[in-house]
Amino acid sequence: MKARTRTTIFTALVVILLLAGTSIVLTGCTSTPVSESVRMDNEERPVLEFEGFTQMMISSVNTKSELGAHGIPELEELTIPISVKQFDLVTFNVTDLRNRIQKGSVSLRIKGNSYDAELKRTEFDIRSVDNGIYSYRGTLKGVNDGRIALTISSRAVIAEVTIGDESIWVKPVEPRKRMKGGEHRLHIVYSSKDTELPTRHGKIDNGPVRLSSQTPTEEIRALEVATSGSTTPVELLVATDNKFYEDEDDWELTAQGIIDEANNQFNRDDIDLNLLVVDYDKSKRHNLSNDPDIKSKPLDTFKKHFPTSYLDSKSADLAIYLGGYDADGNTHGETWPYLGGRHAWAQMVKDWYLGGWTYDGSPHGRRVTTIHELGHFFYADHEGSAGYRQAYDWWSGLNHYYTVMWSTNKGSNGKYEFSSDDYNGDSTHDNARRINETKGVVANYNIDDNGTPCNPWDDDGIITASEIMSAITLWSAQTPPAPGCDLLTASDIISMITTWSNQS
Ligand SMILES: [Zn+2]
Image (tube, rainbow, N blue to C red; front, side, top):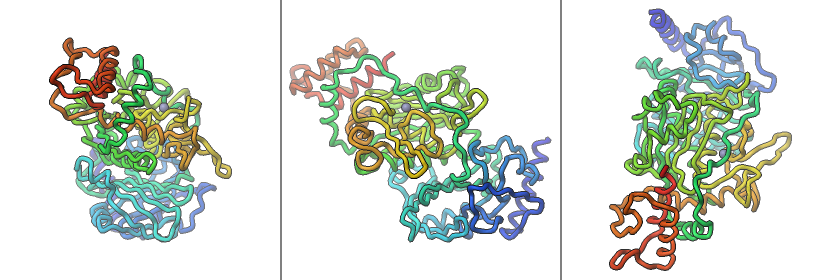
């Protein structure tokens, strides 16, 4: 009853504000500009607007509680990242904005300057499962280092506009249950310059969790070479629990924006890997949320409810669980890595640890964590690891930056890029090279075959390391496993290895 009354008042407020249009100046609005954020424009305009489609609600908000003074109800429900120190509250005419964007361009106003953005729907979105949510990327006309990434559904939009070393974010902040049929969902707009670094030191994960004994590297290299010409995309299943499903405005919008950025990195010339999403899978969200181990062992629990047989049935090589809980401990991700690992977990909400936060669960943080975990699938590793597959860090002016595989969370100083001899790195800091080498093997984890009738090793239904070794020997020697059988392929062996790795 109480909640319904508040909702009614809130709806009335939104209607009044929308009728009044953008010219309204909210009385009693106390704004205390943060020193590092210089507003070029008057304070009544948001840091970023899509011109003609944006309505300002409340400008220059420094704390969530200020929103209460403006009649915004149930503040604790709003998903405003803890790292954001100043933001504007806005709504958009999402339907009209979406129609405009489909035409390939939109006008932006950022801190008082106008820009024309040219947008193109991403190949990743076109090739992935059709869910009515669209991802676009583009550039700002006349700005060398300006780019925009945007994902839009029928009611909300997530966008990152980057100019130089500053990113402006647009993010919906209301949970699913506040949907009331209208399209005017609350969003926040903020600059990366108005965010702070974590207050406590935090690790993304504890490094690749090693599977049981590895097949000798030399044989694996042969497999990698045999599959390196593969142009097969890597097919990914994205799943969530009921917490994230309920807390987000639209978890698929959030998820698609994240994986679109991941694909943007994997797509680079020196990696040349295409991700595609076979499903945004919410079908087991209650199974995950009702499992007593979901916070203590998120990755094990995910695998328990999404066994490899399930991944095979969905034609997925890999699966990632976007988790809505602050899991136990001081990490916010985990992956069963290369070779054979097919499951990963990335935490989507802030990580609270010993009276401070180590990870903000912001759109930026979610992307870094997710790309990091996906990187482990392809044997990308942290800093200080052996060989050439190490993470990289560098200074630019007074800023210290880190590539995405860095082991600790560095807030907005953590980049989406992998280390690479071509951009952020050198010959001994080259995650990109290792991903390029392993992608063919990973892309063959799920093979759509009708069984291999001549397998001499599956009589007991269990695959052992020695059976894999004898299969590799037969494959290398181009000898069929039995008279009259076909030759083994690299895919057959990869299939054996993944089955073996996933046996418990
Ligand atoms: Zn890691």
